Image 1 (tube, helix red, strand yellow):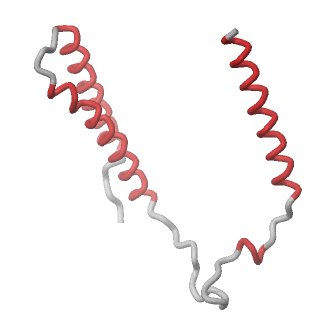
Image 2 (image 1 turned 90 degrees about the vertical axis):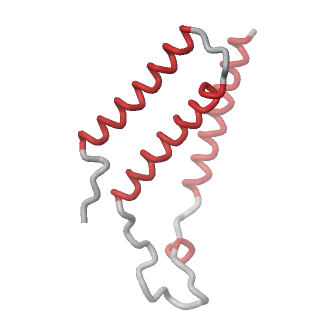
Length: 113
């Protein structure tokens, strides 16, 4: 029964995706509608300023490590931790440090001007 529900959900979502894709392609792209609007005037400056890839990479690395540290906090607050949980926690911290070392070694943490 579960397999039938999963197959039905897959087929239904695929059909919704196909219909949505067909409807979105039927609408033509209009340059005026896609343009930048600044108080009724043509835009004076380039509206899409290039974004620093270095800043983006540092932000993504920060988010990843921040979420992992948040996942570690409940483990620190537990008072009765057995040996297996301690080993898992140690392996998790080792994985974090390995990832940080890899990012550092690859130069992803370096800021270039």
